[in-house]
Length: 113
Length: 115
Image 1 (cartoon, chains in turn orange, green):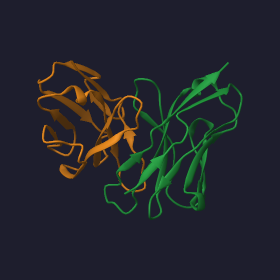
Image 2: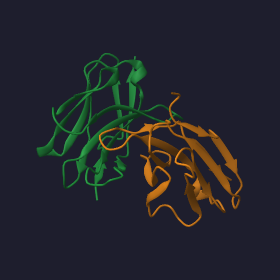
Image 3: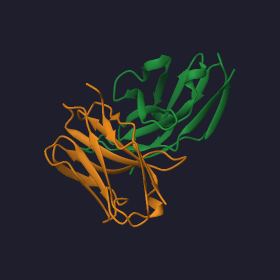
Image 4: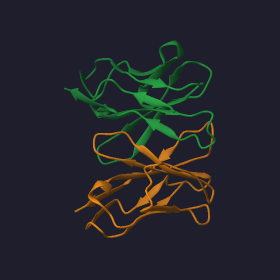
């Protein structure tokens, strides 16, 4: 197992453009999480999937953000009409469930110019 | 809602010296507690976790942490620091009552190691 993979590692985009990130979790993990981390801060929860169902969304997840996990495997996070405040590291993690920690991916660093 | 405080933003220790990173949490029930380490530009690696049982938890890379319910603390320790331990360390609390077990992270402590 290669762990949690995220693509791309870096993304630079102009303000107003749409971006999409992909996360491939560990194959047997049924829980998948998205977190956002700004410089000098700890990660903040965005959303969580149990298999293909999106069960929780943070208030941080404005209507410009959408996440999917169509077949309960990989997930995508799309940001529409990006703003400079969206610049951050977007981290994906997966877990087997209660009693287990998360395994994080290396993240996608987004820079909005 | 749960919260985590890491009082020390930066800590510098000499190589070979002992280390203690502080973590205080707020949560109404028995928490799940974690320590993660992050190298620059990388994701987070799990060092250790506490769910129940023995309050002294051993982790990877020679780290340990002790859960003290009376002090709402989960401090991370290492008896002898190596230069490769320089990184950012995050304490996190998971809500044991919440089916999703989302984590709330502290602001992190950046560790620098002097030769």
